Image 1: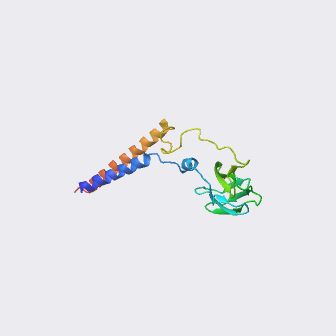
Image 2: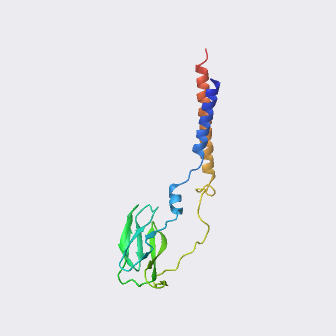
Image 3: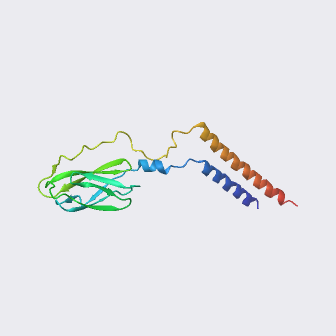
Length: 174
């Protein structure tokens, strides 16, 4: 019987500690997740069709290029678009994908001849800092109010454990 009480008290203590631990925010993870648009196939003849997709985009995405009209890609799907028939053979066009304000670029090559870069190619931006990963905000932003709230939750859980164990003990005495 004593082992059951001890196990119950330990389980309540572990539950209290797990509730007091900080959790990662889904919004932070969405902001940090890289969004990369895909073009299939990446080389196509002028007038052909390509399929555009933005896997992992939580909302509607847009794709823009000098070789086809700006198009909206619905969430979780792909969209087929036609390349202009007057696209320059052997040109490389930049396709800009935008998802929730985050942009990425991919290249689309028009078949025929030696590759050249078209005038629609925008300069690629390089990262300005380290990759945002892990930790979920647990390193910075912890203030005394959060620490006090966590300590209060642990104290309440410990008090509830003592109360339950003593109540059970006093009701089982003869």
